[in-house]
Amino acid sequence: MKANNILNRILAELSSIREVKFEQMTLENGAVLEAESFEAGSEVFVVSGDDRVAAPVGEHLLEDGRVLVIEEEGVVAEIKEAAEEAAEEVEAQAEEPTELAEVKEEAPAVVAIIEKVLEEVAMMREEMKAMREEMGGYAKKEEMAAVKAELSAAPAAKAIKHNPETKQVQKMSSNRPERAIDRVLARINK
Image (cartoon, rainbow, N blue to C red; front, side):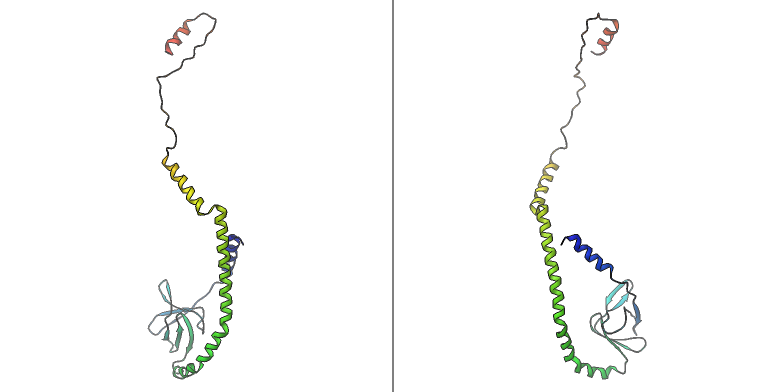
């Protein structure tokens, strides 16, 4: 697979990414949060000017009294009412074994994806190595650098010196007698 084909495939994948509209919520302290949607599993960011930073782990009180729970940095775990908070903590401790089972179920799929990506990277490395060899590799590059240095040190051309004193006069011989104009031109040309 050529490098251009790989780049074209990557560009096609990137162009298929859809434009995302973000929702915003404000915390009780005035900080603005931004997410594609405020649902469990969606990414959430703290907005400050033009910068967007992943929201920190913890429970954050929203302006409307609800609590935004973030268990993994930048990922919404849930949004709950303030009164439900205490009751759900007890349930969360009971649910931990099921979450571990879900992770174990998803692990083979993640491993397969990682292996596929590693294969693609290995193929790209082989293609790059073949292209380097085709172009002459690093030895060719070093040789070209040496030639460039040698040519840079040499003068561009041999200097030409102008010498106006040496003139070669061509005399034409003819069988005709010398006229006055011929004598004048001969003196001028001396």
